[in-house]
Amino acid sequence: MQPERSEEEQTDRDDLAHAVFGTEKPTGSRIERLRWVVEHQQAARIEGAYVDVQTANACVKVHDALSPANRTTFVAMTMRKMGLTAWKLVR
View (tube, rainbow, N blue to C red):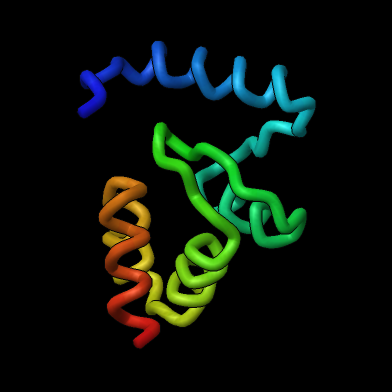
């Protein structure tokens, strides 16, 4: 089990991973970063969570289908909880 890391520590690790693999780092809000993952067909770390293309696509589809009030609640979740919730709603 990995030890808990601060947000700054995780950001440094994410930056290092993108530098080592020569990949572009997604920027913007969480939903914009998820859309980047879907558009570029490339998994990425978002807020410490490794997000694959299918999960990013599920999150984006659910976000777009929700009402504005529910979108706020959905985006306020942690990335892990957001992914799990998206998969439950997609089924």
